[in-house]
Image (cartoon, rainbow, N blue to C red; front, side, top):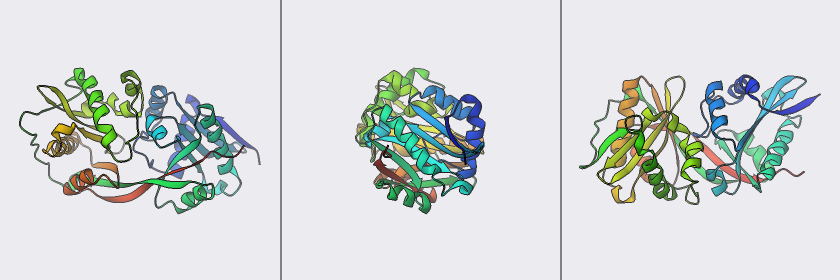
Length: 311
């Protein structure tokens, strides 16, 4: 059995995407872009601190790996990693080889641990990680909204607040960044994140969805940006919530509800059929807000942290 593990080049992306779809039809992390060649190619170009690996057995695509060094991962004490092997090739040590490969990349960028995200229903993958010393550090609930089954909500922003998009007001981008500097540390699971500079933020996973400014909704007052909510537009009628941020002084005044209502109304009017979101189980305010709109439960996601593979 000849095993070859190589870094994915642009020409390899179709095979990587096809295998990923076969093993895991959707990513557990909302940060990961949709499984289209174009989306991943753009993501790779915008985020150089990452790697994708393709494993072949006797010339046949058999497994894949992914790593990403990001502020979110570093706040959790490592770098994000993903390892998957097609069912017919499991039990031959291929997963261990990929684990070692992503660990080598982690060492090169100065990381001492890996952070994995797995659906809580992936019992085999969780057991694989546990045998290698990985332990749960966070748990997220995933919710979905069938847009055909809910009425278009009324959009009622607080007095003095105007709602717009980055497509209409591109000059608000720095205000959205400054909002993130205040709001991100208050979100359960992201408390220790240190946001990068404005330019780095635009290129990182935080700014990934900004390439569709029509889906970045911004709340403003006479003093500047006070709230923002972003949708990542994907294939098959799906849009994913990438976060809702509100200035501390404007919380508990209905602004988050107004932003969410705007997103739902826009998605319905634009032809999307489903919205999805993922929130830390400790983030009770946003979970209650989502449930009030009719979002329903999907399989949750576990975040695990563990050691690099022994050399």
